[in-house]
Amino acid sequence: MSDTNSKIPTGAEVKAMRIAAGMTQKECAERFGYQVVRSWQKKEETGPSARELTLGEWELLMLLAGQHPEFTLEPKT
Image 1: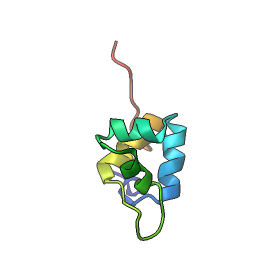
Image 2: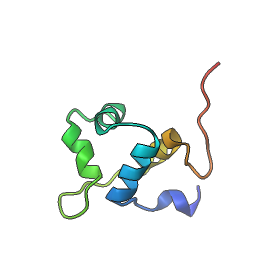
Image 3: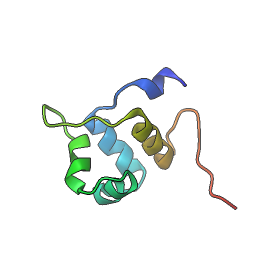
Image 4: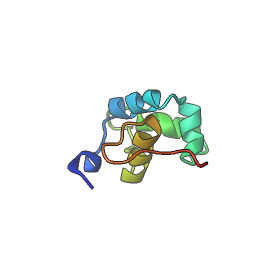
């Protein structure tokens, strides 16, 4: 795994990647198993109330956005 994947993304980077993936906050909350959209919103914030994405969440979000530095998603045939 490259060093690019191991850094903790900022709230702004999370938001930009979500937008690049073409997803709403509600869609991300559902995709990542959060019951409340507010839980996802906290991942896009900065400051003391912000919550970090896990490495797995960040990598999946990069894959969904087509911006993972090492891997791509392919639809099943």
